[in-house]
Length: 309
Image 1 (tube, one colour):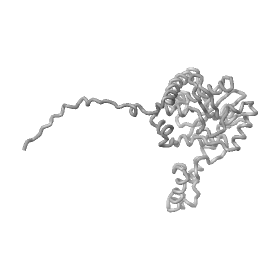
Image 2 (cartoon, one colour):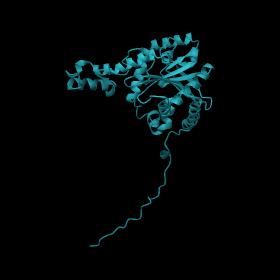
Image 3 (cartoon, one colour):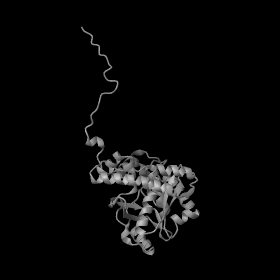
Image 4 (cartoon, one colour):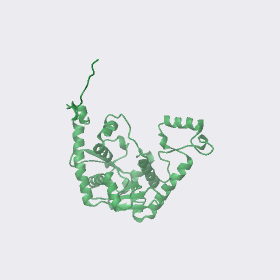
């Protein structure tokens, strides 16, 4: 869950890009989520849940739901890249809590309603004690990244350009694509992405988890983008932080067979996406057709006995 750039963010990124001798027109500074182009996340949702895709992005009848795990990952990323930051959380002042620090009483009820009216979700409201417990993990992850030689180079070194937002044309379909990289090292042609997970403990569990969440699509798309925009092949590395105590840091990349699999899958999905977009084909099949049905197999076997008076 990314936020719009502030003016200071834009100045900092443009400075880094200028130092890296990067043409500014290749990179976006406007509101990323409202800018033209199809992102990896859009393609993932389109491929896995077309009903949700239509409701969120076509009909716009509901909002995209941010899970607790997604919010945690976003907060960790902000903590690592920007230092201590409240992010999208709202810390509840103690004066609106009970004496024991619980969400109770009329003051809490009034405060909660005021925050809901301002657009906050109740899950974003956090007591000071809850926030302190939560940031223990953030601090540990950032500290472990700084102490991890490879992760530090990719995430927190002075050469990193944070969150460059790119846009490019798909060579195969001509679709306008967009993406937001977590971290980019121009002088080494390296792209890195920070992930958090409770279940990744070794290479095998990473491979399963990455495939299930389609992280390989993200790697393949961003590698394509930077090769097109920069004219040079890049490498892509995942920095994975354990999201439970221990907060171990591991780094992984994907072999060509994994990336080729992503390219094959993306080719199918992008072609179908383009077809739906160009022919107003977002409607589900059942909305376009009248389906003729037959009776069920067991129909007609019931005997009706009518008792005469």
